[in-house]
Length: 194
Image 1 (cartoon, helix red, strand yellow):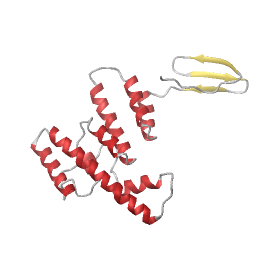
Image 2: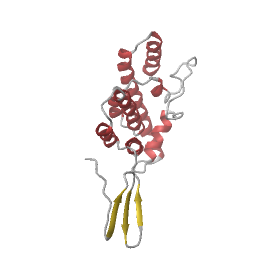
Image 3: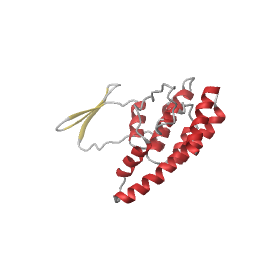
């Protein structure tokens, strides 16, 4: 249900001009501006509310020729939110619903993208090394841990991330549409598995 509520006690007037909602009380007038659904979806993703973002997307995006492309992009964003939050199984489920370039994920692991491939990640700038992503996520957690505990956690989560990428690449290998993509995937798999 797409409903937003605001407390409105001692109000004296409400006015809707089609674009804005004006709310007046004895001492002030407030203007409520609508926020486009796309902006709300991105805000929910930035706050790691993936389920809510996907639900809002599904409820508000018209069924047209563009919806499959838009769905894949939102799923890709959702996958990276889950990945950076160290929720790897959820990330992998979303990754497999996209048509993303595997390099988008490989760039978190230095040395997995061959030097002859000129690749710039889209919409996320240059991602950090997976170890830094894991450390950042751990440091944002609710519990404080000692340095030695953190090092152990980092190692465990980096291994989980590596396994997530292996699982995704094995899936992507079956979807590969050309020899160059297949070679990229195979090379990354060999490096990750050795």
